[in-house]
Amino acid sequence: MSDVQNWVPQSVDVSVPSAARVYDYLLGGAHNFAVDRLMGDKAEEMMPNSRSAARLNRAFLRRAVRYMTDQGVRQFLDIGSGIPTVANVHEVAQDEAPSSRVVYVDRDPVAVAHGELIVAGNDRVGVLQADMRDPDSILGSAEVKRLLDFDQPIGLLMLFMVHWVPDDADPQSLLKRYREALPSGSFLAISHMAGDHVNEDARSVTDRMAKSGGGAVAYRDRAEIESFFGDFELVEPGLVKFAEWRPTGPGDISDDPAVNRIAFAGVGRKP
Image (cartoon, rainbow, N blue to C red; front, side, top):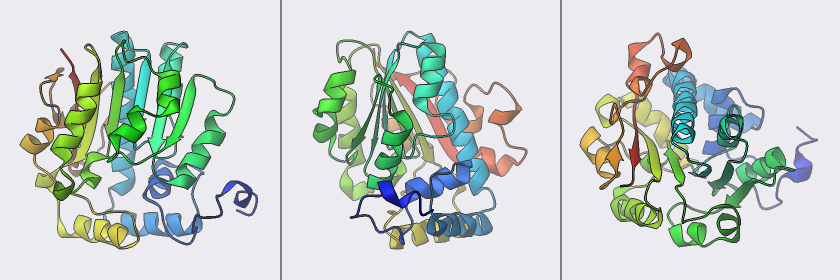
């Protein structure tokens, strides 16, 4: 990885695992370090469905983005994007509609550094380092203002993201702030770990991530997750387990029923 060190910010401790890079590793990406692969292997050891869950979440991302582009959406805000690799938003959107514009947001400086390299030369895509819990810093950023027109529908994605926001950080008010900023006709896509499917192995893995700086997962039930959509109209089939949201083929569903139930997912439209 010595050739990678040239772009890693000096302030980043690459001896500490990053949730974004672990996720990239589980997806089969190349933008991760040995410490991330070790954490990913431990996660897979304790939760043998970790890799499959990451794959199904990325498959949901592809379907949600395609659905939005089919509805005429040409601009996307991906908050908590991680490293935009392995069938990322701008590739899917621009394949369907080349004029599509995308802003990726993540708080991990290494994820952002990777993202900037990946999208270099694509002037319709931007990368922003910010924390989703500070919506004003995102919505008011120069990059968002450069690429997104808030007079036109926007596709907002928060995939495997809101479950990192603890209840004491008031995720309801946070999501409301984002929903209110979106113009009519916009869409919100959320995938979130399912509280009715958590077990001690899952808690052990996420506790390890929390202790290493990755944050703790807040497992929530279906009603709690659905409330994050506010008055947005859930499109069919509503908020369902993520493998059940408009699957298009075998790659969208796992052979293991337990994996298919790991998370809820849905897409809502602003009236």
